[in-house]
Amino acid sequence: MIISDEYGITKINDYDFACKVCGKVYMHYSSATRHLKEIHKENLSNNTCQICGRTYSRERSLKIHIAEKHNPQQLFQ
Image (cartoon, rainbow, N blue to C red):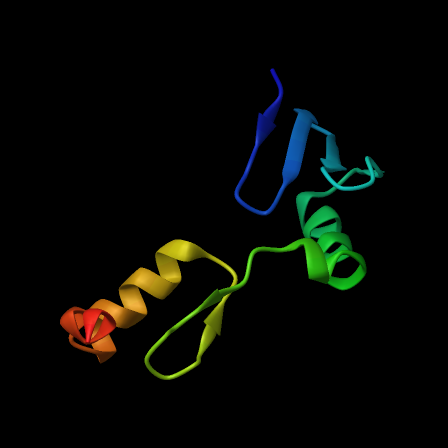
């Protein structure tokens, strides 16, 4: 079963994890994510808070930040 996560790492089987950008295969998930973040950082989604400018690699983290640190209505002002 092939599964992709939000970073773009594809799990091929229990021991193989592939980078979605270049296809390089790693034995460990952590190695594949490190590769993606270091080599293909420009291909990662950039979720920036429109209120304070803080950036997050995950959209969910940005949504939590806005809900906890800002009034979400500020986004529409």
